[in-house]
Length: 513
Image 1 (cartoon, rainbow, N blue to C red):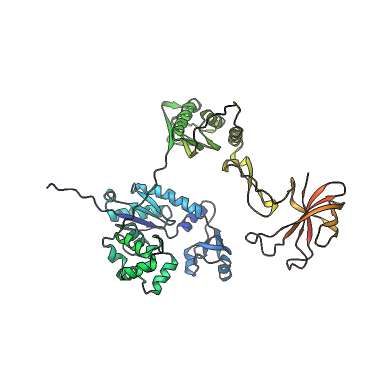
Image 2: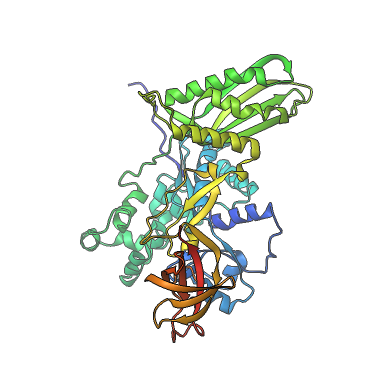
């Protein structure tokens, strides 16, 4: 029988970032201002059920016993010098996804491990880096160069690798049961409730859990899903059941290049071919570009770039040329350039659209093209439109956002009629006489006395306790028509004896047409 070459067993590398949120925050802050000194406790906060809670802590904060999940106000009462910054969990997740793609320098099969780590399948690639130990050392070194604290471990299964990276002292594991036995059951990534239950049963380590009869335990944990069942996770960690990695596919790139036989000084004659080729690539994949970048590579080794965004996905080459036309003069060609690239940085699905049968133009497309030209000429921060949010306060419903940030959101349906014009801020009026629990019969606004002819209301708007400061008073709104026919929108701030201030005050907030 000829010798058959056996496929080497899988070797999974787990990379754990214990301070991912804090490390990323330091990288961002370092670019804009000086970091606090090392002896000052720094925490990142996120919204909680009863106010901001701690999301991540620095080394100085952990030294003082500050832990994630605690309320910020409670910790500040104990540590007045606490430095609080907002957390960005969505940004951290996006950064980890990009880091998983960047980590493919070590392995073509990488995937993010929840919110704080990476998995790399190193089967057949470790020898390219001088062996498994050298590969793990290179991963830690390159992560440290990016300002990231990383713990690494290698084992035959993802569960064993991540358990050793977080709780173990062994980096390269060949005997999984022996290496996992002394680790706590929390190393299996169990939730706190399951860990507490196992501790009450006296099963504090993975070894003690593995030695228990499975029949009684399966009866107790049979109702739990697989990702919370300790026996299922144990079987995956030791390799009894399969636990494959589902790595994301490589993001599709849309880029065109134009290599010139000799250096030139003007990019305009070459833009038409670049735009046409890029739009052909986008059309074949049924995508449209939202962000485009032009790069020229000069003969002196330098490069220059121009970037622009579009209000909606587009793959119209003529539209792209119009947007770049006024910007090409800003590029410094130096002594000439011999390579140009046009790349779609951000794309969105855009199916083939049939033109209107009646021959009319698409008004939405015309509006998007106008916004693109205005933003390209004036700047993206100069063109904005309305964004509406769900809130009780009439003055906070509408916000302005850059037009390139996305489509405008439709306004929420008000519970009652709203005035066309709101005063920002609302102007206080002097009440001459007010009907008890009703609108003022006479009020003075801007030195003019008005007498109420009829009214409608009240419409009560309570404070938003999750946003407003303590002591904020409720509002009672009235639509008031005065004797000359004009209609005003007034509100009384607070009610008598509400314990949140003195006599209620009156304000004029809007005018009806």
